[in-house]
Image (cartoon, rainbow, N blue to C red; front, top):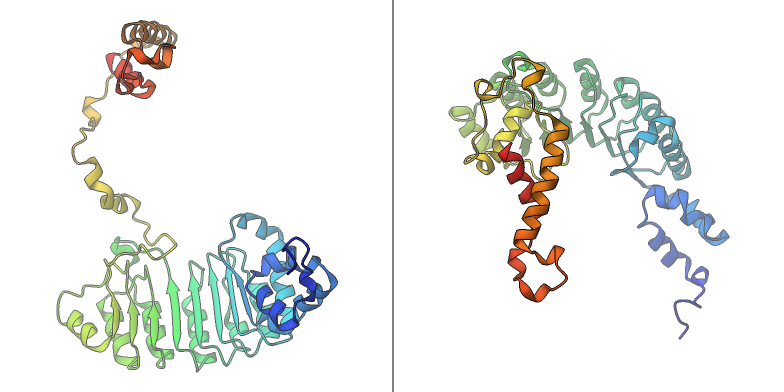
Length: 342
C-alpha cells in the first residue's frame, strides 16, 4: 500500500473526492482547494458543491466590507446554477448581496443574515423566494414594513428568527413587530425573537394568530411577564418554550443593551470586595499634595531589593536547596502590597 506521502489523491473516485471537498467551507474551497489541481478545480465547479453556502464565524470579518467575502458569496451562488438551498451570511451582508442571491436562487429554502448592519431592505428580494421555509435576521436593521413583506411573499415560511439586543427600559417596549408577525405569518412553527420589545399584548396576538406554533424563544424579552395566566397559556400551547430570563449561554451574540445589569450575573465574585464610594476617594487640594510618581518608583525599587535580600527567594538565589518553593517571591503580590503602602 502506498504511503500517504506518495499516494496520488487526484486518483480517488470522483464521488469520494466530491464528498471530501463538500466538507470544506466556501472560503476554504475558493481560496485553497480549487487550486490544488485541475481535477479538484473541476469538482469545485460542480453545482452539487454549492447547495449549502455558509459564511459563518469569519474571524477577520472587517475585510468583508471591502468586498472580499461579498465576491466569494456571489461566486458560490453563481456556481450553484440555481441549486443553492441554504445561505448563511455573517457581518458582510448587504441589500445588494441579498438581491443578487434572490435573483439566482428561487428554490432557496433557508436564509440567514446575522450582524449585517448594512442590510435594511429585503422586500424586493423575498418576492423571488416563494419557497423560503426558514429565515433568520439577527441584529439587522429591518423595519416592520420589511417584515410584513416577508410574511406576504413567503407563504411557506415555517421558522422565523428576528433577534435584537433587549433592554429593560420601558421606552423600548413595543408590539409593532409582534403585531406584524401575528398578522402575516400564521403558518409559523418556530419563532425566535430574542431581545424583542414586545409586551404581553403582542405575545397574546402571536399565540392567537399563530396556532401552529410549537417552539417560541422569548429570551431577553424583558417586557413580557409570564407569571400569570399568559405563562400558563404558553406552557400549554407551546411545546418548546424559552422564557425571558432563561440562559443564553448557547447563543453566540450579545442579547442585552443593559450592560450594567448583565454584570449582575457575575456578582458573586465581588460580594466580599469593598469598593470605595465617591466620597471615599482621596482628594488633593493642589498639585503639591499629589504623590510624586518618580519618587514612588524609586521607593518601590528600594523596597523590592531589600525584600529580595530578606527572603532570599530561589528566584534571586542560585541555591534552590535553601528554600521551599512556596516561599518564592511573587512579583504581582509584592507589587500590590507595596502600592498599598502608598
